[in-house]
Length: 285
Picture 1: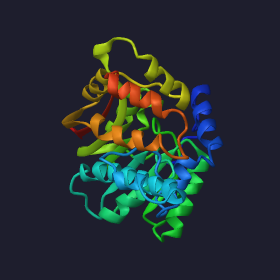
Picture 2: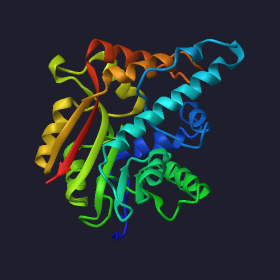
Picture 3: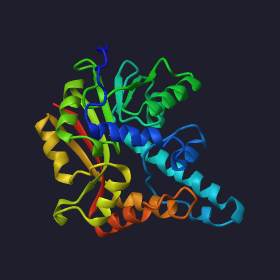
């Protein structure tokens, strides 16, 4: 059951600028070339060691080998997130908040067989993802909506699980988790994978600021996540530091044609300790 969509999806000039950024990056090869490998289009980064053999072999196929390996690492990250959504049933309804081109939502339906709703403030991403669901024959169970994750319009208590995958840096965490708390049933599961700045270092580093500038986002300090969760009846049951696990992805990405120049700031921030890559698993009480 859902209520009607809010009349105004983009509520502020900042949200309009974020939507414009993602709508205008339609042909960004860092997402498209990786997704073309198997039709799962991700908008996040990878975890795990890469196979060094992809750097060997014929030079003319080296780039394609690297791109295929990057996609494997990104899919491994999505699988890890789904591993922590708990035991989902076919009758469940789950939500992908900031769903991008829809890859993780399609993976979730494949794994759990339940209804998946993705929300995004990018109309281009919503249209693209719905076409992917239709091509795979799952559009009855996987639907993408042009809606704001801070005000989805979905019914209170209608979700058994929600996840965000590298999208929380675009919104106010207290507003976001208030909406998730409203949507989740008692005992419902929330999983977040995100980059966050390290409070121990004080103000954000130059490298973290460069990441903000590149993606038109506002990276939150680590402590803000736990304050916002606690204020909204979301209790962490597991916190996993994925920082070391994501460094190989960035090192490999810097070696191929889809590199954008943001690889060095990510690697600098991770290695100097000013930036962390966390997975937070929380339950609604």
